[in-house]
Length: 246
Image 1 (cartoon, rainbow, N blue to C red):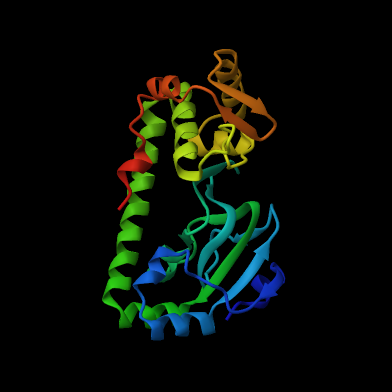
Image 2 (cartoon, rainbow, N blue to C red):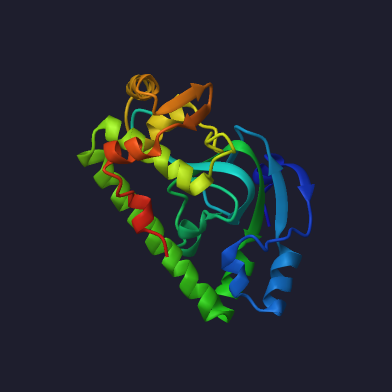
């Protein structure tokens, strides 16, 4: 069950969500899927809504059905370090729930989203019933840890120019592009800086340089990719997130 505080943060409650887009749940039996459908709740979030806070306990896991959610930690000086952007098909907030710890990250909606909440008790029942489900979730945890380890290495060893080129290519591969090569994900300069671990001013300078070199085209939060090949050369493209897929 959601706490009163969590319930008040949601808008337009919807029942009986369809979870077919979440690959994790394709491992369930028909009976287990029915259990999931009957006990999960679906919500709509507006951009800017905090789904959960670092330092608090979760009531369940969250599955992103639509939109984009950023997962981040707050630094000692109050600056965000974005660890990843979750979108359709992604599951978030499961690690701290499975380890019975308080949340080590926060989640905030960056594009209007629909999110499904699955209570802890239901998750644990599925965890005990279905070994394939359990194994998949353990692999998800390992993948997430590997992503963070690789992110730390990227920040430590690559220049801002290289990291910016790399993250643009990652967004292209992960979120896709529109017919005119514009990234489907809409991201602010601050969010981009917080993702690659640098100052906003540095990202702005690099993006402007890329635009002057005819590698990208900027229009507010929209970024059009004009020359993926050159960006790949700049990034020495060995995307850390690509190594983490399973």
